[in-house]
Image (tube, rainbow, N blue to C red; front, side, top):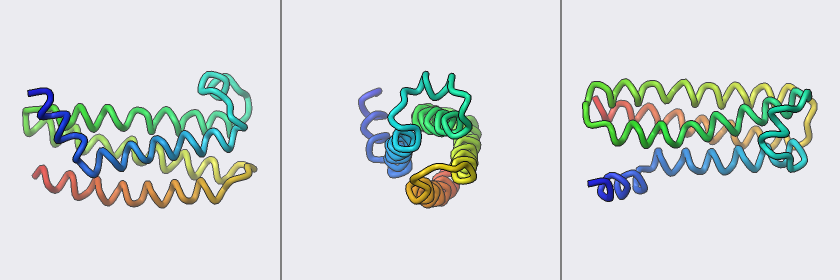
Length: 132
């Protein structure tokens, strides 16, 4: 049964988009912080390093939450989990705005990530509606 769930998860466009968001946020963070590791971004005193760390960590948390939602068998809990995904998307969007407010190079990449997050929000809305 787990193989069936994994199979449907890989074909879920919302899941695939969240993986793309993670990859893109990691690339943006790498570019903005001059290729620092997550641990060095977390321990940095620079605001843009901390925002980049938050961006990566929130995008990393999005993917397992979608998997957890999809594997939930109780329809009420599945809907509740799906609606809670909006929190991660909003946090990612806020992290992008915070990065843009700091003096960084690569604001165009951050804007591109924000556009992708807007698409993810739309996909999330359709995903939640499909569960109703």
